[in-house]
Image 1 (tube, rainbow, N blue to C red):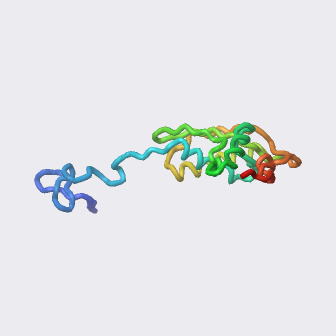
Image 2 (cartoon, helix red, strand yellow):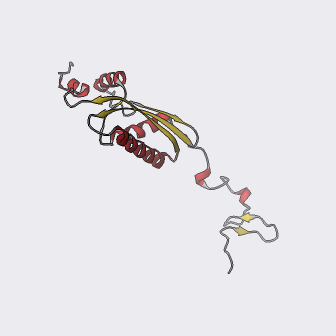
Length: 164
């Protein structure tokens, strides 16, 4: 049984050639289009992906510690400020790997270990699928527990009339 090669060989020279008969080394662009250039991903992009993935997990009440949530609530009310999707997430992005630190607030009554495991799995899956980076670690700090009778800081701010 014989094998078929995908490139042409120029007779007598032993060099790979393209469809026009030019040696591969003389082709315009120098290689496959997918390998031309470099893609860099900013820390903020990975932080947003991880923040959204963590918020999707049942049992996660909020992201970030007390001060981060307070500043985030103020920023959310400023026109053009928008939601701070990356609040409570810190990423260190290298060329092929990333490491993440998350700070979360858990709903009272859920298993912290189970929620942390699910958050870790969800974040790793989303970041690796969307960025192609290898997630080497996801560190989770549980900074608070949301009790059922506590008022939510963000809900409280939404009930107040806004000055214009």
